Image 1 (cartoon, rainbow, N blue to C red):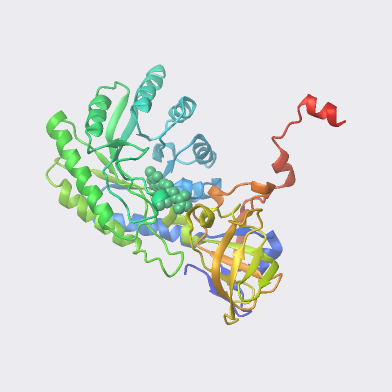
Image 2 (image 1 turned 180 degrees about the vertical axis):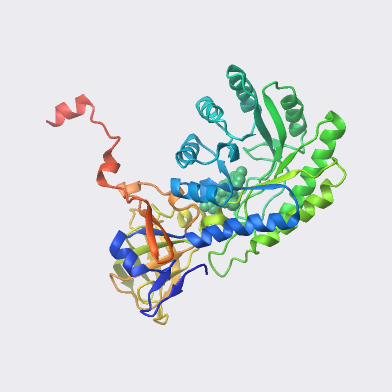
Length: 438
Ligand code: LLP
């Protein structure tokens, strides 16, 4: 998919860059991002929305992969940006992301984060709870500012996905429940805040979703809520944010819909359920993360140790693992792999891919069919663009890999490989310790 193909040498090629050449130039493990594919995904969302005639914003959920180059690319493609921490906001600001298109999420924004975002004059805060509502009002008042907000509501829709990454239930740390009256109460309060301009509400029903029905039901419930807000409080919502969660393909078990299908279903549900509530339909915002960058990422590893336990299993170890991709260990996520240096060789054996961290749980893939694997082979794991680099760690003091953008036969470094100096940069030796060791 994307610009990936197998070239005449039998090597995997991404964005016209031969994977074996990428290894020579940048080393492994290496995250390779198919830049054209990321751009295509941004455009698919935007073009699908354009075709619906609705007013819209497509915000890239930067948690999926937040680095300066990615924020710049998203800005260039006309996306808005969802950030959930001071760190993501800082990264966006470093990229010069247009501040009016930045939306700030999170269930526990600190006073310092709210101040930083107010001072940066970001476009919208997605207020999650009453603590935040009052704090934001007070901080905006101190600055004599008025700022846009959405209220995050939980419409009680359960997405068809892994339990740990589903956030739309009633029993959730996020948002105001529509069902128990908390959301109505929050709207009433928000309308009384002199410094807060309530644009509307936000709902996010989960992640890695393959069907449209969850979004349709969420739109319907949010519309019903919008109607009661108008009837009970006389207030109208200008913006409805339906969150992210559009699924991607990791393995054959995954059956995502084309981006346009999700957008069409959302638009249809909005047109049906919001008709007649106000004179005009609300502006629709969405927040895809995974579906923008997920399948555009490939991680290249070098194969090292091989342990064959006859009749049991063959462990093939690579030079990375849970430190660059914690998803298999965290969510039992499944991935596919191929030998990037011998991409045409037929599959000959079933092996399991182990990471190098000191944990039995550091397994990237259980049972994958590959040609007879040798130490030194180049292993490519696909669909690693989302929630890999952004969730990477330094466990075992393993350095985070470099990231390159590959396009038009050119690979450009967008994140340098961490150095040993990076690892100890913030380490200090207290005097007690150093005097004793001397
Ligand atoms: N908007 C909100 C409010 C969210 O909480 C999320 C994801 C998104 C948008 C973007 O969702 P996406 O389009 O990427 O599915 N670390 C997990 C995924 C956690 C998702 C959290 N929220 C994983 O690796 O599967």
